[in-house]
Length: 350
Ligand code: SAH
Image 1 (tube, rainbow, N blue to C red):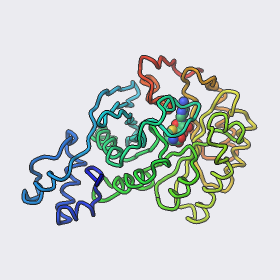
Image 2 (tube, rainbow, N blue to C red):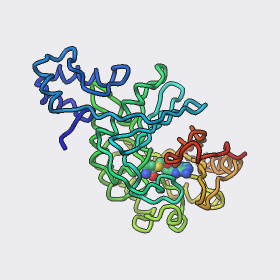
Image 3 (tube, rainbow, N blue to C red):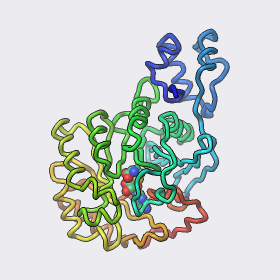
Image 4 (cartoon, helix red, strand yellow):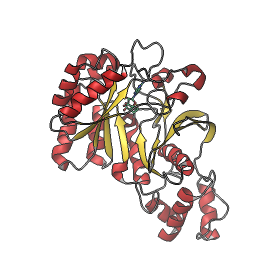
């Protein structure tokens, strides 16, 4: 299928519309029109009818049906979206002065992390770049004016490295000028550690990288992330080290670490994590496990989370605790499949 809006780049649009000025008008309309455009209009100011009409006959605007919009008391909004019968979820997370949009890269997921609710869906299909950008476009249009959607994380459903061509194209569009012109560093791709994709991403993209490490030994990691058998921890961190050497540290690296009670939350784990990350200028995000039934995994106490955090900070690691956002509406990490009724979670244990 040829590219459609919103995944046409400025240069592709320039070719299609015969001038850069018309392409710029089209992008401004697409990203700044409120409410968010859901189809191509008959006329577009700044683009002559003679050019626009044939364009609308050969192209369309990919746009989802919003099947559900849930807002959590903390301001997080979870969207259930329908792309031609395929359901995916997107989360808008407002912070102090900006919002982050959490995008899905696949319907379902190609991976089988034990702790993640998305695995229950299995793999349904790859999402096209059009569908990833359309998720951003919708959330952007609803972000509070004082907290514009300047950040994107590929941390919704799916494994981005298993759909890398489309993810890279989406990043090209999201970071292009004149619109939406996100900064490369403000776009983060999160991976469960698919080594070939990770290596290619590091070679081809300037965006930020998040590695979901989630354990400090291969043995424990294999229990929660079976693909560790194929790509052990040392191979993943080796790829990051190689990138650090090649780029002289010109990229933001995040290490995501979901904390599971009595599995990966001990002082010895904290010390091993410090050693593993030596030479990688990374920031660690500690995510207390968002429980869902049947995994046999538990959330550590708040005191244990804080002690683990303190131990990393004491050893000089930049570390933040990511207390769950949107847990009330099952919009927190790893919960995206769950409906509000089936979720029934309690606030995080003290
Ligand atoms: N496949 C990618 C992106 C989707 S998961 C990846 O693995 O990185 C996004 C983040 O949510 C990952 O860091 C993952 O470890 C975390 N996550 C998944 N399920 C979770 C759960 N139940 N509780 C807390 N974090 C979870």
